[in-house]
Length: 243
Ligand SMILES: Nc1ncnc2c1ncn2[C@@H]1O[C@H](COP(=O)(O)OP(=O)(O)OP(=O)(O)O)[C@@H](O)[C@H]1O
Ligand SMILES: [Mg+2]
Image (cartoon, rainbow, N blue to C red):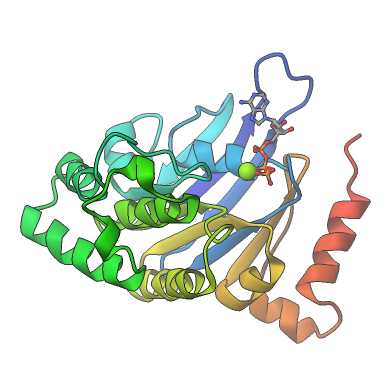
């Protein structure tokens, strides 16, 4: 559902590749956790999957559509929750969600249905008539999660989605991720929180200094019985220092 072939990116004036020859396939019905230390290249990868950044080389495909050749068709399949939760501060929450629904061509009755359900899940119903500028960080984050689901995307990409959420909302978000995957959709999210990744994901990838250094199913890691995901993560990222 998401395919990256030999994708690389170097930022202007940088002397190293933020993402270095990354090849990765994420399947339908799968929750994939993308782990890596600070500065490893997680957000850069996510920005290339969502078409915000263009790779210097390599190819990104979403459901068989080449993102570079057909950006609108590919992006239509994606719901994206960025790490900065930037929204339009001068709109009311409900106006923002209606705007997103219109952008994606979702019928207004469907938008209302989805907004009602998700806002209730995240305890945001009472805040929706208020200006976004009055929202707390966590409330903006929840709004951003809801906005990304308004068009029921085949591919749901979330950058550090659990950081800053209260336990109830984090629980609801994990449930929603599983629900999306069970419908045959794909969930790709980055995280530092190894416990969460361990509980939620079907498969994980570890990136360090722009390179993908491990990909495995959680079942395999568990069955190996030798190492916890945490010790595996710490060992791999400690060994692989940038040259
Ligand atoms: N806009 C930018 N301009 C220049 N360099 C950047 C830019 N964004 C990221 N980088 C660099 O690219 C590398 C990868 O950054 P990236 O944001 O992808 O890491 P990350 O894994 O998401 O880290 P974190 O866990 O801190 O969010 C880092 O060395 C970072 O300094
Ligand atoms: Mg990041």
